[in-house]
Image (tube, rainbow, N blue to C red; front, side, top):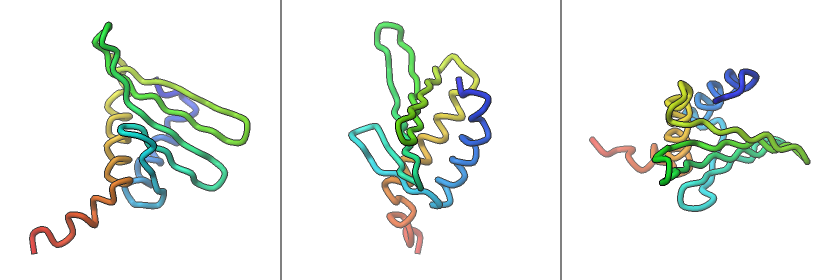
Length: 104
């Protein structure tokens, strides 16, 4: 679950991501990171085949401190993290520019 102290941050991060106020970069096929000011953010999806359970893993790094947390598909916060992750992908791929003029 999203820690209570980070709920507002995650909401604002999604907004900032959608407005291109922060930039995300693909780390590998499904993981993304954001370096902004002196903080690095990392988000990635996971699927546990044994449990048939999806999750998102998120980490905040600042200097020597790392704050990881996970949100599983059985938790209320899962859709919030899914929306953030999808905004991150669109941001990292600069998809807004890719579809600009599509209907012109």
